[in-house]
Structure formats: structure tokens, C-alpha cells
Length: 172
Image (cartoon, rainbow, N blue to C red):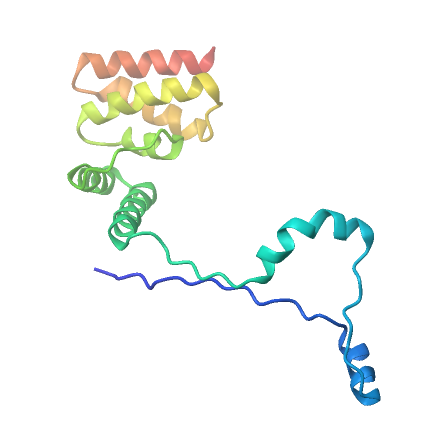
């Protein structure tokens, strides 16, 4: 298991005078005075100026929550990058064993159409039909190819009907 480092963020204050002016004043023995910013900048930044000049150290959230999020993202990235029915099936099954819920994203749902278990494919078709109500398909040729394959070769009648219905809705 990879342990992520604790992330700290700090901000340094800006210099108070221009370097050339500070050098001139140091040669004369005077202390540098900060040059006033333009009036428009002064009005817009008066309130947050004090907060911006102070350094802040921030520690990220609890390591357990981050580890779970990182693991979820890793599993979903593996599923999205998988090619072929066997790899997609293994990646999806691993996601399911880890308790990862499949997001309503076209890329993930499109991959789930290739799962060996037709229940995954039917769930993906239902999710895709909801998604296509709000947005257009991104990888239409691949989607149509996978739906056509399911329509022709699926073992269960419910899967064949769902694939045919989704293909008809894409044409309309």
C-alpha cells in the first residue's frame, strides 16, 4: 500500500519595495517606503490583503479517506483503460468487490457493455439511456457496435431487447 505524503502549502509575503528603489535608498542611508498601489487595486484588495500576506499551513484530510479515494480512482482508471471483454470483466469485478459504485459517465458505462455478465450490460444500457437524455453520445460508432453485438449474440432476451431499444433511440 502506498502512503501519500502530508501536503503543506505556504505563501510568502510580497516584497514591500522595488529592488532598484531599495538599493538607491540603502545607498543614501534611508529606509525604503513601499510604493502605493494604483487606486483601483487598493479598493479591490484592501480586505483580503491581510489574510493573503500571512502564511498558512494546511494539512490534507484524513489518510484513510484519501486512501479510499485514491483506490477508487485507480480501479476506475483501470476499468476505463481495459481492452477486451476479459480485461473489462476482471476490472469491473474487482471494482465491485472493492465496493466501488460505477459513476454515470459514458466512458465507464460503455466499458461495462463488454462485461461477460449480461446484468452489468443491462445496467449500463439503463444508465446510458438516462445519460443520453441530457447529452449526446461521445463514442457513437463504438457504442453502436457494442449494442449491435449484444442485440445479435446476447443469451438473455431482456438484454437483446434493451440493446435494440437503445439503438433505436440513438437513431431518433
